[in-house]
Image (cartoon, rainbow, N blue to C red; front, side, top):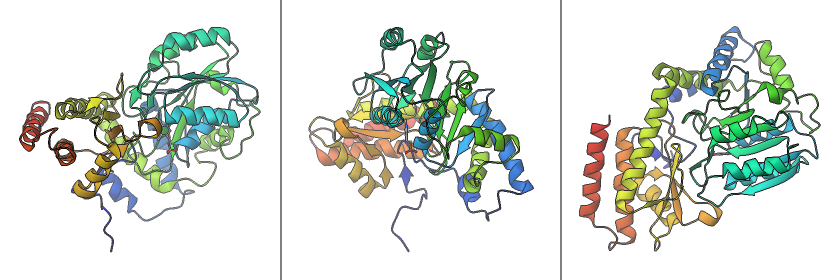
Length: 391
Ligand SMILES: *Cc1c(COP(=O)(O)O)cnc(C)c1O
């Protein structure tokens, strides 16, 4: 019927979202639809909302929105901001730019801390700017800036912001929450957003958010216009065992499955599994001749600088067309210079090994003087040993 990849063993979706789906999720997606106002769905919703707190590592409520991650980013802002409020936006790539732009759209006075691509934010710079603007309502930061694969020092930032009793620390955890430790309560995070197609290993279409008590204080006084993303409606509905709008039954049912998989394994073991994929990729991609783009690399995604004479976009395309593996290229200023490999989702050792092999073959294809096929085979052998020894 179609020649598109079918998520079988031969196709790997190794982007930093969307990701390969777990076989149990695929099965769940095929179930007959049920109505969201049924005892059957009520039970699912109730246990999912409870389990989400364990992933967020919070005692606060977690809300589930039918929107992409960006909708969740907007929901965080509109529920606490009023036009004219001061916002400090840490901008270290595409997603930081987007959040700053959103805050401006809702009338905030946005002070940007520009971080060069590939670098992490200076906690001292944030501290300085806060001293200058102690009346800042919110500080915005990506936990992992997916466009550069940088992991920002969220725990340290939380410590700096916490003493400001009227300033909220908002974190975009879309490629972090669920992929590596980001305990909301312990790290003083006042608002956080996660996304279904990234660390939550689901199809695209849901975002998950939570607010601290410090943030909830502003729900009623916030003057940003909001209707769909008014968290007060959702809070009331959840308390009654429902969602305010029609529930995303298909994805929430899948989320139930994913949460069981993660919690059965344990959060630490789940994080360790993703960390191992990141370590493996960083190690063997460098042995092939790539270099790391991020100064402080995230475990959820790896950004690799391609050799100077090569084009990352061509490598990305070749990998997809010839080897049936999808990774991502760079955006904006990093376009052509980097490739990005995701470590979230359902990824088996054989796929990781095949990626290294195919990346090596790509390098040879584009410049046979850069690496020989014998050298590629040697790296693949080392990589295979590594996987066996670090099982
Ligand atoms: C993917 C991503 C987003 C945007 O999510 P959408 O689901 O595409 O709206 C925002 N922030 C980060 C860090 C992301 O990785």
